[in-house]
Length: 98
Image 1 (cartoon, rainbow, N blue to C red):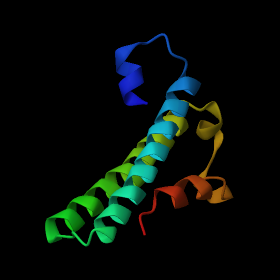
Image 2 (image 1 turned 30 degrees about the vertical axis):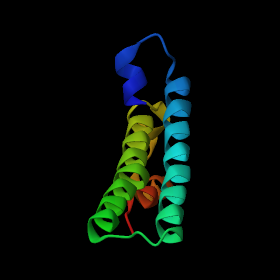
Image 3 (image 1 turned 120 degrees about the horizontal axis):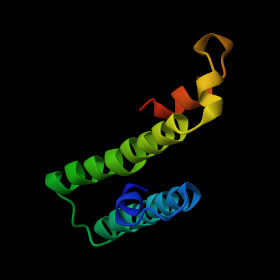
């Protein structure tokens, strides 16, 4: 999303969101195959485990959080929401890292 926004401002936001979703999907597939191949050939290391956890944090926590923040920031509906009426719970629960 941020790459597309900075490269060419003529893209609509929907295409930027789709591109970001596509990159997250590609990251999940590559993350699966990376771990699968490492276990299959029995080649694991402590640094590999740490780097995998770090890339998971970026790909599946930080980037989606930025996406939700951008969607909420550019949404008129978000400005009408209040924390007391419970309408922000889906957004907030998405940002919580387990």
